[in-house]
Image 1 (tube, helix red, strand yellow):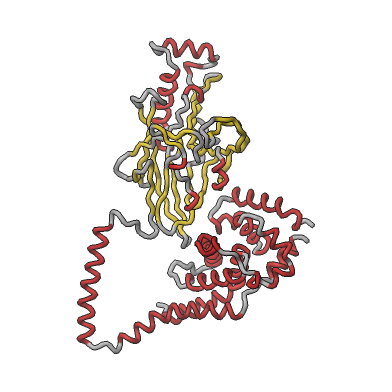
Image 2 (cartoon, chains in turn blue, cyan):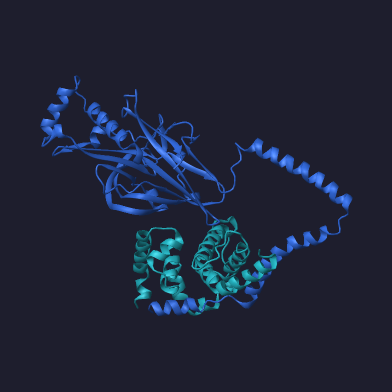
Length: 319
Length: 156
């Protein structure tokens, strides 16, 4: 068989005349329902009509009042809400994402030839809720190939099978710790994708409760991370080897701690590229329409020195 | 201003024009005639929506997208997930070309739709991206993977 046989076979699939007539009749009946009501109304007496209008007015008023009362609690058709750690993201307040992966920042930072290279993964605790939603697309601007800022989704779990990726920058197999059901860590290979966009069916969205949430941070395998990386040239470090770099931070920080150096650098660079730190969430509804909400990310110093010295927040913005 | 009867007449023309296309997409997605005919009925009613584009090619693209969405709805329904398809309701074409359909149905649904739009409808990768609201890169990689999987039957 070749492509022609495929085309020929598919071409022979034809809707039966009976099914065609049934479909057209269904469409016509759908219209006719409205028509029947219209015809009947001609026989309604004036008094009945006035009475009906009064009843209608009361009914409409009740529905209107009900809508106002329910406005904050009932999701409207073709609208959706985003939650992070069981709180609704809003246009008014920043919500702590509390999804930093807990890795030591210094492990993820590197320095070579005068370039500070800093990267970290922010786990994605965001979930979409709404009605008549077919799928949800999470996207970041395509900065992956542009220096100095990089913002990408890092997808490195078995859960990735449920996602479809756009603009994959690279994919590879990666040996990573895996937490099995018996809470024992073991090493195994799994696919890693770095992409600027991924799409997930509404019903396949990660149930974050399925993943271990300890002290506000997800441990073990998580569905999706957001990787934020910076490559920033520092003149003061020009040509520095790792050894000379150590001398620099020891001179600059009274109590030498690579965390301080990297977190300061990260916060500085994040602030510089704040306008780029956005996640675009597009919901594709079953009727073919779509809506997008934009999440602005914020990064602030944290007093919680048990972790990464930084806190991440999200807030909806109009674009 | 269009009257209800004008709209009905126009809709019937559209239905007749795209009936087979809707059915083909639905049959490939749902794997049986009865469900495909149900989807066809659903799309007929959806065509009364005021969101239907008037101009081509947007109209055809809209119909393709809505048909695929209606198939998703049926696939997600508990009835569909908890029941087996009845062999008697298979399309007769299936009986003669069961090898093609069995291979096709091994593919994920998104691959089947891309194969159909590319090889049957003759759309380019760019156009398929617009129809399915996916990037050309994604469509291209779906097509490549689908081709690899279908190599046995397509290249035979």
